[in-house]
Length: 324
Ligand SMILES: *[C@@H]1O[C@H](CO)[C@@H](O)[C@H](O)[C@H]1NC(C)=O
Image (tube, rainbow, N blue to C red; front, side, top):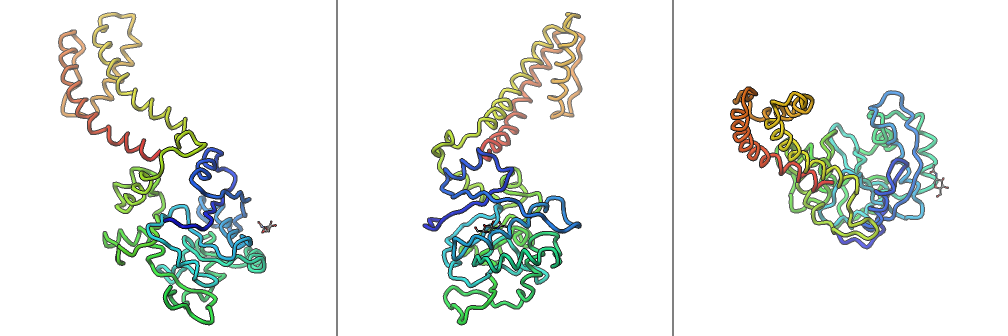
């Protein structure tokens, strides 16, 4: 969104060199951090490393940090968040603070205090969000931050309007944003497995289209990354592209050689390929293998059907290519 501020990405072990290079090429400052252990015995498995997020309170080379989860997208300038106070975040349902978008003033004293309490304060989620809700126990009573009317003295905590952390769960409730859509600043793709980098989620969650539009408009040729192309993904795409043709050829040769007993194993393979083809047209019976004539005429029909099938299938492959 045209910001001139430092864009920092914190990466832990497990983020590939390729991804780091891509982030750097996109203009991010990539900072490596070590993981912070999750002290909770009872927690969702995927929360094993989330306490690491607390390290943003230790980024003391910055006076103020606007933190965004990786599953958020900024759709309008959020510069005014840098004027928010010591700690600002959103209050969601059940009077809980959401840690997906936060304004933080890093401080060694604050971070050390948090580290001292990590083992003793309860976490209702089993993750960092639950811990922060215990740490900022009075957060629900905070006043809403108004960029045009800063409060003096500056409160310890302030609430952000939904515009800065509009979660897609909220959208699904009414099938629309219940706030002024033109004023939206940050969309947060909260729903568990439905993450916007999985191309198929656009079918289920309408706001994913916003994310995919942003992605499609990114520069194609990034320096140092071979045009932003991942060689491994390219191979997968090639295989996906060639596979239908291989199956088609195989089906054709199978019907020509069916009298030859020596090609039995090949025919088994071909029969398998044909069955896969017929999965898409259950109304038709499997072709008779008795004569070449019948087989080749049924091949003609299936070829026609397959081409319509392929027509339906193609966009989904291309959807996948677009997201890689
Ligand atoms: C916090 O930041 C300081 C200064 O950069 C660093 O020396 C220290 O290792 C950090 N602590 C943790 C737990 O990452």
